[in-house]
Length: 140
Ligand SMILES: [Zn+2]
Ligand SMILES: [Zn+2]
Image 1 (tube, rainbow, N blue to C red):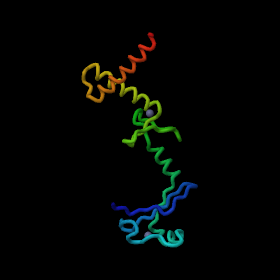
Image 2 (image 1 turned 90 degrees about the vertical axis):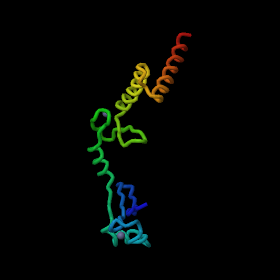
Image 3 (image 1 turned 135 degrees about the vertical axis):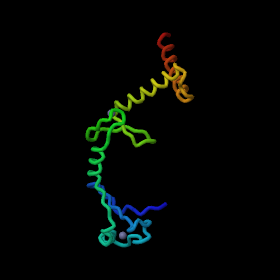
Image 4 (image 1 turned 120 degrees about the vertical axis):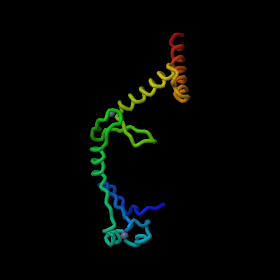
């Protein structure tokens, strides 16, 4: 795997990463070698190759750019974002719930209309069987 970057320092407060990028896009350690002895002195010698990421700034940048995939609106500062593992998209809490309910409605609509695929039919039948069980408990 080609990777010209490695993490040289990881400063927790105030949350700064210092990366060393191998010059010319070469693989890590192939041009400059491993940092030996004092890392700070090594870093000073290689200061031209360093890339600093300041996380508070990146959080602000992300916050400005990020939109909810459900309603298209922004998030409040530090508002929780909800997502799935398979996607970069994010949602507000209520938008995520709405999406969930919409999915169930689509399944049931498809089931009733006979247009549902196997997965959707399976989910719809499972859901209906739960509803039936809950009903029979109440009438008993
Ligand atoms: Zn270097
Ligand atoms: Zn939203």
